[in-house]
Image: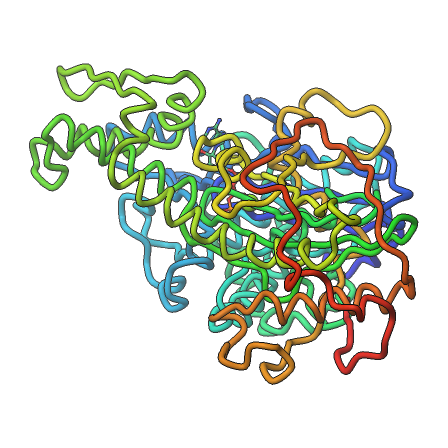
Length: 544
Ligand SMILES: Nc1ncnc2c1ncn2[C@@H]1O[C@H](COP(=O)(O)OP(=O)(O)OP(=O)(O)O)[C@@H](O)[C@H]1O
Ligand SMILES: [Mg+2]
């Protein structure tokens, strides 16, 4: 039976995290969060290929390379791109940007001839082929890991702004359906070394594209794991929270997922001890459409400016192109080793970490990142303020850094030098008990979205807060002009109503590293929690 029609094993749920830089996938047994052990969680080795080296099998580089004969994926595409450079060819990197940042109509335009010398493919088609490769890889990896496949899937996505969210979500789900159809057609050929030939790729694409059923993901409910709101998508920061925050009493956690294309933020709160409840603080999520790729571009620019090279000038173009091709690897080496040496024609230049961080453009980027983080943090702090652990015991805000950019200095400063004074704790994704592999540990902060997105219970979400319900009626649009105090009071009330508990929370969870910053004193009396902490019937509904 075809993959797309096959009944799903609904004892497990899967999540596809189609990353801008690195794609990941995981399956998790359908159980409550607190009863999960490592045996119930499988990060799939979608980067594992016969005859192709990979840096970490759990990561599949989101890269496609079109040769004269075939379409290549992942590490193989990356290697081919380096060889193809002398032919003035380019890989199709960060394909997810076509969903996250580009205009929708660009998906169906022909690609630059350096990327597609055959002129046969649009961005949408290469996206579908890449996802088909990912699905075949996931099936093979699931078999090797002895976990079921296919399973109902959630698809992770950034917290796109409203205008993009609905159409973006549908486009992504349709792509996944077409990818299943292509995977049905081509099977293991999509995983073979040397890629898939143009004849095969084109014929599979023709069939998948002509089937209009795939434009309606609702016609394939068994393929997706649908939440109560009918959506198969999970926001990236929400997925991190679902898989990384275990039940240990009342906690307020801010997630910062710093990826390749977007930096995603969200604030969450757990219930009281013994109550496995996790809620997303309504309207706290934020996205900055700049992350690792943006830093890569700034590094290339920094080096060229420093060397006085004009990348538009024919004399500088070769060096500039080479630098651009290697920019992601250059940046990773710079942050890992503290300096890098690059060749620009006959010139050899050294770039130091500190000098790059002091570049005004890098500082401006760090400021934008910090400012987005602060917006989400304001919600978390207001929530912690309203619910102290006891007299003179403010609830600390935990900061959970995930994604490939979690160790960047400007990101670590969220905890070591936070923008708003409060008591902070550094948190790390909480891995379920049981043995886990070294390869997993090395990248577990990058896997947090895929794993969390496959956990059965996503955080509760409160329904939209009506502005007249908030104490500050001057805040006209909660999602644009946040009014954390008003919004959070409702969210917390909903948590408490769900739990029907009156007592004051106690938290004795102690993450490994704790940082105190600024004032750790309880907030002013006016900011103490409302007396209404006990259960009461609310106008707002909760939904999963
Ligand atoms: N040691 C490192 N230092 C700096 N950056 C790093 C390091 N390791 C990975 N990165 C960067 O992290 C990014 C990839 O992280 P991640 O896998 O979380 O992103 P993604 O999920 O592909 O992107 P997105 O979530 O935005 O779609 C890349 O920009 C990569 O260069
Ligand atoms: Mg990501």
